[in-house]
Image (tube, rainbow, N blue to C red; front, side, top):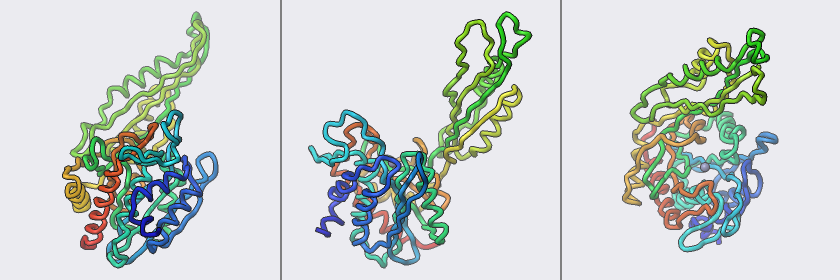
Length: 380
Ligand SMILES: [Zn+2]
């Protein structure tokens, strides 16, 4: 039984999918993960962080082996809610026509299973291997990977390389890996005026023209033209609100919301300062939340190892991309070079999420080659 548990990737994925773990996740899915890892010689630490509504969140850090190189795999066991309309049941894994169905099959219990299956036959003295597994990637990610990084910092644990198993492939397994991600910041601009009767404008102060002036100035800002590895940063206005129900009232307040996805030419705080300086010229105020800074692992030895492993197994040459939304790599990149590679993302977050079993098996072989090569890389 145990041999099957550590080598059969489908069996491993089924065990994880069968644990309902809608974000933020704790408990059963981590029990299953611990039961899978313990026989492989891992020392496992688990802790729960945070309180409702963003928590509690369970996190798991597992490590084994020693040596000059320390390779880490990062992932999440939480999933987005199932939604209504599945052909089967989202949390009862089901194999049909070469596909394994279930919430998390691609994002990302399947790739966690593939990583475990990949390291099953790598000897412990080949080097140190760690798994950094959170129960909150799909939610606000406040008590997830950041808490794990604090846990690691307190113990002076610093991997040399980190592979994040997010589903980065698009049309075929291996066609895309991510060497960076853009940053993201959301801002709320408010202009306060003085409410009054439209027939007596001298007694009022209309905030709408001032908000429009702010928005038109921001619309003209060209943040950059992109870089070798990133597309151009972009600012999108996502809401304008006055909420005035009367035709004869000058409103007292107008507000707008905007979102900026930005490359490594900028920082979240720098963009907030820029927007604030424009808004303040017209008497506006700005609230902001920076949800992630950009990161880039410039192409080098690590990305070359990953690309070579992908091509050897699939025959596909991966594109090195920085597209898409934020991921936990934004935190991990502060520790060491981080690259993301995983399954095809066509069905992630959708009804009937499913992974090709052949892809799962190929991913095991790709991950095995990456770990072996990464542990052989010269230190320093
Ligand atoms: Zn994910």
